[in-house]
Image (cartoon, rainbow, N blue to C red; front, side):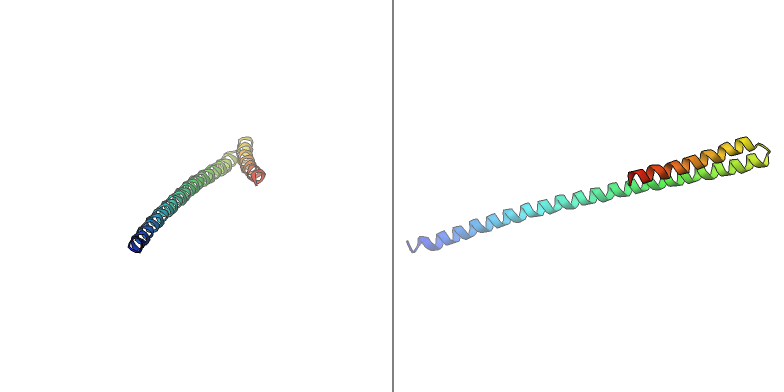
Length: 104
């Protein structure tokens, strides 16, 4: 029995080491998946911000265009069309702020 005891202890030690290695491997896979998930979430957020930024620039361009057209129409003596252009600008801006505040 004394001869078997060191062999059993060695086998038990090897089994424990294998189990620890398997657990470490599982943990590493979990951490890798979490890191990949965080990276994907970060990339999605950056894409959303990029789209939002383009939308803001487009909206700014439209507002400037409508303001310039309103000024030009006023100078050319067409105050009705000028009022429509400036009114469309204001309705669009106010509507955007109202919709944004409703979400919050």
